[in-house]
Amino acid sequence: MTATLKDVARQSGYSVTTVSRALNGHDDVNEETRSRIRAAAEALDYSPNLNARQLQTRRAQSLGFIIPAEAQRLKEPFFMEFLSAVASEAAQHDYSILLSAHAPDAQEEDAYRHLAQSGRIGGMILMRARRHDPRVAMLTGLNIPCALFGRTGRDDGCAWIDVDGQAGVHAAAQHLLALGHSRIGHILGPDQYHFVGERQAGYASALAAARVPLEPDLIITVEHMTERDGYAATRRLLELGRPPSALIAVTDLVAMGAMRAVQDAGLRVGKDVAVVGFDGLSLTAYTSPPLTTVAQPTEEIGRKLVAMAVAQIAGDESFPKNELLIPRLIVRESSTGDQSKGQVLL
Image (tube, rainbow, N blue to C red):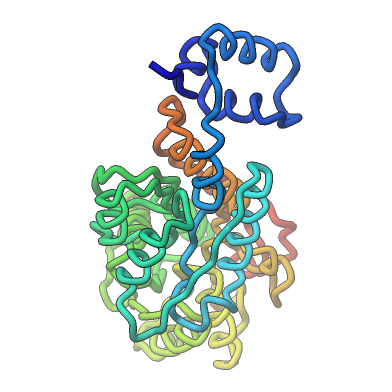
């Protein structure tokens, strides 16, 4: 029987990914490791199937990524930072990112199926995980390796990396409670996204721990999570008979809209109404005032998602299938009202 890459990995004691990189001459594998792997390959009389490699190269060396249908996604700072991290890490593995898109009125699942069956990719990177995500079910059914930013709420065979949104929003709410706020508004995104429920749970748990009643009129759901949505939701909250003295927004972009609404109402962000976002976008350090945010490690997420996808393509079963990362609460002037210098509390 002809030896395979997995056989060499088993014989040498290294992962399939490391074996592949060593035999292909990548300089990130040290000489001692490379020598051991070559010795194992020679002992097994391993010879790569060059014809198969030529047929598979274009497919295996590309990762698919579907650009979200909504036009504003291309303008979202978080989306751009995430995609930049994914592309940079893919290049480190000698992979390219194959971008595709679909019309806003087209079936998103059809776009994923078309790319998956095109023969041009070895795996896919997904973001904005949904509850019981149909994209994941379709890709796993087609045996396409996938790596997902976020969780679907069940074990459905797709590797994932997520940020503990519950812990992040809990810390944000605790921060506001410690500043003396008891009426804290919460601007949420659509319930279809798993992370929305996680963040709402963090908000509720912090209030419960402080014995502050949860008031439904202080919670607003927005559809698109844009700056415009944040502005409109905040205007509604400020028009309440007893408006909130603080706000936690589902994203930094929504929080920026909230700050603008507070300012347009003649109020001071951080002094009259505290505002906290979620994402940790680079530009939040330069808003006026600088935005307090629950920061996600965007670059780390992008790197690890690519590594997960590449490992699956290579058949490396030792690679972790999922990972939950802890965010950081970066405190700035939008919540404290003073010249806070980006203090990290979580």
